[in-house]
Length: 374
Ligand code: PMP
Image (cartoon, rainbow, N blue to C red; front, side, top):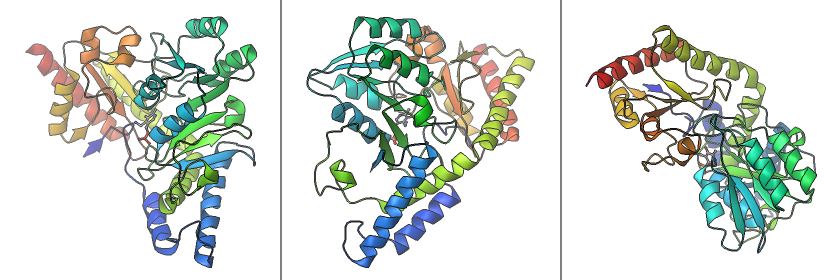
């Protein structure tokens, strides 16, 4: 089977699985227990926390709150970092865990900045909105999960903070972390969301990074774990596995980047060499981990199922929005209805090869000529 749907989730790596099993067997103690088992688990918890904080160049007194994944981290950021009557700015391109959560902020005024044709936040509109309003909280994603478009976060932070230094800036870094550099000091952000299952870690574990001094109101109350900011017995095996896979991804960042770039370029070269009719959603130099294309005259979903019969698994749009026929992100980029319907998303991971890329590119061309001839 060829798996080209890594933006929706990845297969857990041996490192992730083995460290998960080891921690489950040997460190199953409750991190809050006062006996030596609890202390051992608690030490492992803090070691994992420090590994991830170090991997994003955080300061020693910054905070990392483990939770059930980036959906929860994004909910924590939006509900926990805004107040009654906050002015909030986010973008039309965000993952539903930001977009729908922002819409659910009943007592805040929320604005959505549109995207440009390449899938990035429209910088002119952004500047204008910042100029015209006084935002308390801004959330803009680093890498778009549908198109791979990369937002210039340091610039967006600088623009926001030069208008109002007190604006809290959060960034959903799920599709960036472990794939391109996510360094909170360079980015200037106050908070970021992370998820383990996009980087060959286990599902159901993620984290919210908070810069020292940023006050969060918890959304989950209980026994006061995670500094009282996210109650619930810590999922230590998943946390340990998360830290290990993160460390591995950071050490091999460049090598992995070059491998997936070769895969993406191989596909595009075959398309171009064979004069295949396609359009990239986003732009060529976006994240190499994601290739979103529109194929006019083809229904993305039909192509997905034809490829499935060849044992090739791909996506259309994102798995999270694939059930709706409209696509807010592709439409905001100016795509026609036909281009939206003809969208497929290929997303790569560390296990993919150039040979797979060649095979898939040729199969796409073959199926599209058939579908276009009908
Ligand atoms: N943000 C982005 C950009 C994502 O791609 C995803 C996963 N589809 C999420 C948030 C949600 O992450 P999780 O599955 O860990 O809740």
